[in-house]
Image (cartoon, rainbow, N blue to C red; front, side, top):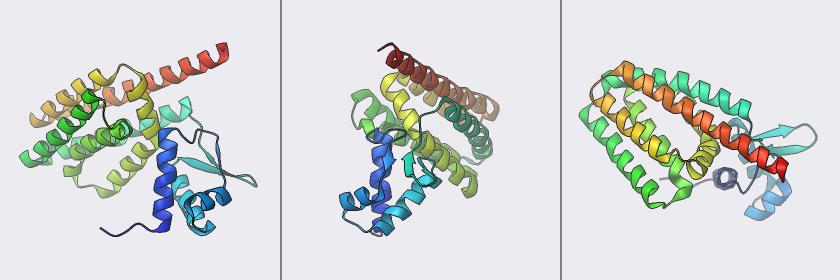
Length: 222
């Protein structure tokens, strides 16, 4: 494995701060301050910020610099609608090509995911394991361009998914749906698997939107 470049190191560190919520939506990202924090020149910082802009985690405002993107219900709906379209399309192409080894690999990932959920450990990585399970199901389709788009959408959705996993009661339901999805894939029941995946993603979006609306209402009352 090749060592990270300065740009990759800075991008990974800032991304982690955004996804953890240490950098919140609307917060500015000052290049001089970041260069000092990571002990690098402004060039890798600038390149890192451009990378994160392409992932949808920040945006540049003219004459003002970079800012973390706001948590937005409209954005959640759009991201999750796109996820439904692409991920159901990917799963439909993957199921007929799945080998027993592919399914076993997905199940092993699901078991690891369930273990960290049930023990409450490695909270910061919950959403990573969630996507790793889904990715294991999509990989047999062998559609790298589509997978790249799905990965980008999941990166943009990551902090919303973290909010759902940490603050809603949907974890047990998600676990049950993952198990059911794996069974349907083993049965090669493409239609039922895609219907379940569609509901799984749509309900996640509604849970997150409901939580954000509640948080907004609470802040207004206070």
